[in-house]
Image 1 (cartoon, rainbow, N blue to C red):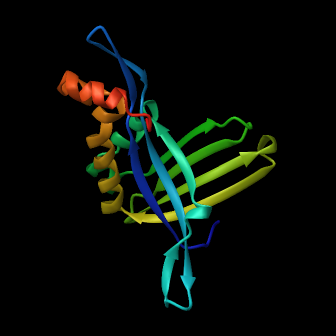
Image 2 (cartoon, rainbow, N blue to C red):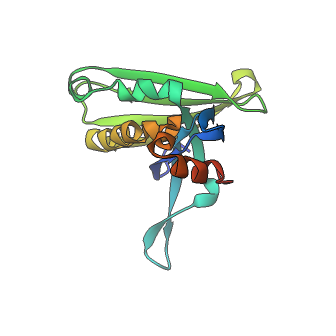
Length: 169
């Protein structure tokens, strides 16, 4: 929805693991969800509201996370950035997360694209964020990495057993 006001939200999803004979086995790594949420102006309330029904999601897996963590503050201010991450979902729709920035700008462009029918149909959701907002999202990714990998289970066996029983994961 190019041209529509949007916000982006970054949400960590914990990894899934099991405990067998006091040994912790990671079954599935977690991910970072990048949610693109359209804003709509509510005339009655005279303010913008989030339209959660139209939110679009990109799940950044642990392997792709390095591309975000690799953009340090110096690179953010002195280099052009062009990162293109993608994956396919069950119905052969390809999702792409594109992060672009020119070195002379103080904003990054995040673009979420849905590509269907072999590339003949492309739907794009775009938002511009400031450098400091990207740095906050990057640091959230860095902070969340142990949770995405299931390493927080190493804190204590009691903590690991409680998390392993959590059906939401």
